[in-house]
Image 1 (cartoon, rainbow, N blue to C red):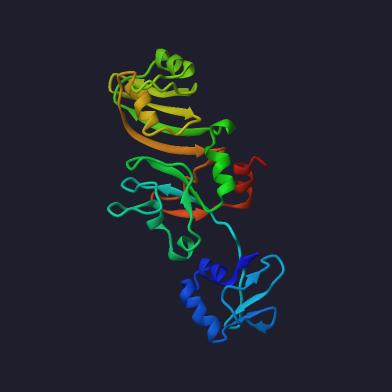
Image 2: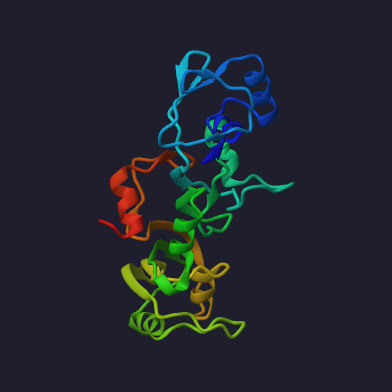
Length: 239
């Protein structure tokens, strides 16, 4: 059961105050009867809500894939910096989605946003061992000793011992390297700090996969779309 004003607000019909005015003016019907109170409880599976003659299609959760651009922080609100939520259209912002985990401000690529707390917990809880895969450009060559160090578990400069990770070398020479990195944690600047312990610097970082979900490469940086049912099954471990 959900409040009528919350449902209509989430669907972009206005603020709860504005919805209250709509109800007062008789523009909202529930099961063929004019609604009297904006805070009345609605059975979202069975009740039929009509606004100004149009039946609404209610949903509780939203699931969004974003190809995050550089320059945005993974947060819902900030007084000084642009957030990934600022990129979304108002009708999606109304659902109050939040980023699942985070990508650093200058990191691009796959970012999930949802208001489904249960799914969020499954994806970010260390006990579920969810893979996060990154493409990275490194300023120096990368070799087999780096691969073994990642497999053993890197110890960061603050003493934190990372879980074993996977490092795959795509190309490497005296000018630098391109690699794929798979980790199951999300510590602050983790990939960059892991390479820093090896005396190397990450000059570009892009997340390409998260929890088995691959970034839609047709999605331009700064753009987003809602997940398909099949993609959602992958994240839930049902595929």
